[in-house]
Amino acid sequence: MRLSSATFLFVTCAALTLSGCDDDDPILTPDAGSDAGTGTDAGTTVSTATVTTSSPSGGETDVYPLEMYLDASGQTPVIAFRKVLTLTFSEPMDPSAAQVALHDRTDTTVPARVLTGTWSEDARTLTVTVPRSEESTRPLEVSTRYAVALDALRDATGLALPSNAALEFTTGERDPELEHACTHTLVNTPEAVTAGRTPFDFPPDTQIGHARYDVTLRAGEAGFGGYTGFISDPENAEHVTLYLNQEVPTKVTNDTAGTDVASVLAPARFICAGITHTVTFTSEPGDQIHLFQFGPVASERIQFVLERE
Image (cartoon, rainbow, N blue to C red; front, side):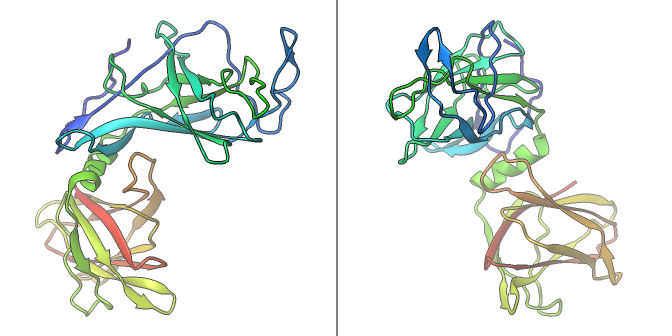
């Protein structure tokens, strides 16, 4: 078993997990609409069902190896790690057959893990949760090629998928800053503020590092929007990141200098439900007042975690 490639310190306790597996025969990923699920196998007719969509997608690289969530099953809720996989098929499947096998193709000494998924009501989408294993603190290893063997699944007529049916993907490296921000979305009580309608409408301060803000925006003709404030460090330039729970057009202005500040709105890798996008910018030193202009968006409320370093 390989050791973890990184160790992270979190502001709260976190439970983690991993796994792997092993098989000498190559496992192929059938493409949606291909004939990989047709034909015969040792004289037995096999299912024509194929995977039409999946998460991660077949052949995807740089897949994040874990997801963070709050596990409330014990007496004290803790942050835990898992990885959720989903596969949607071209036709209804047999809901009584829900086992898949997870194979580690990078370290073939790791034994396969048999996992039982859950079928959707229409028996076309299988959700498989990869938990932590007894040997590791993560569900999946970083920078590792995996294959999820699907040959134990059957379609609604009882025909099994072909022996080479599999979902293959490769994990990437971890992002400690993003994982750290996720801990705040999971355990911090949000600070509720109401955005200013204009820059002169006394925008509330949203400048505390590690804080989670719940912002009520103002209604406008094009949607909801508004302003909040931020004051730069007296002595040092800082790299500032807003970890948003939805895509929000955001403009950053140095109100003291009367200039716009270059910022970047970008999608975030999926690690936790509370973060979908980030806004990043650099603030210059000197106790300078900045304004965040949010919107317009369809939602009246947005949340973000602010990190400054």
